[in-house]
Image (cartoon, one colour):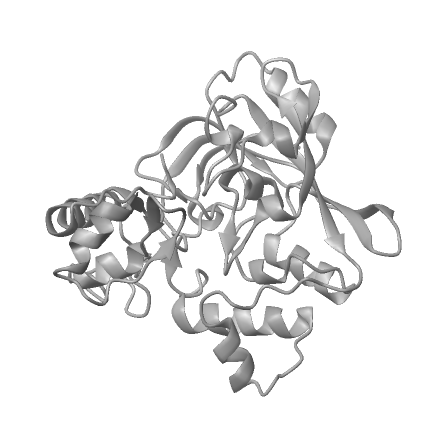
Length: 337
């Protein structure tokens, strides 16, 4: 383990922003992590996972700690279910494929989401009707101030839509080091009625889908809509889908007959942010080195050498325009640094 100086973070964030860290270290085991956290001469620290849920708008004048803890193991199992623990540095999609290859179900709808395992609970990642909380058992985390390990169970995490305790009262206080999931071994409960999964399975000529089929369908849908970060810099969905009152939605229906929605309760509905952004005229719009992706308005992209501040300003323009047209506030899903 070696602390490096003046390191470009371009390889470590999926937006491909060329911000620099004054100091940088990659941590491969728990003891090294505790040691780094105990250093008194490095008070300003930034924890970096897969770099998929962040927008760097400036250099970081401190120590960037890249969490690179690897390993997957079965904790316990019976005839019906299995508990699998994955360390924080494991790539999320590769972990999903590992589970599917072992015929462990419940995680298949979360295929091809960028990032690492350790950051998944922070965001309560979700896709196609499934959220991380649905398969979450527990996680272990190091407290930054004491370097002690603490276990968080589902009830401790206060999971909400793209939200958790790690984005609220525990923000900046813990580093997740491993996550344990409870998955099915047989009689998998497939979730295929959200989005285009059903039609994609039909296109694949699959009438009795397995978890492997669902995963392939999700991957196909995501690849058709979302750019590969290795080819075009992006962080996936930049904005959360807003939840508005039913009364507000009914008012919007008078002028926007085709506005889609997903009922939350009798009082609230969720509206796709991508639809709002597209109707506001931003889908496929280019601003030279950056812009909005042509296939998915939720995705802001870096076409080459964009600066983080440019993408941030674009996101603010989108928010302002959506508010002016629809009276809806859309919130950024990514962390702005």
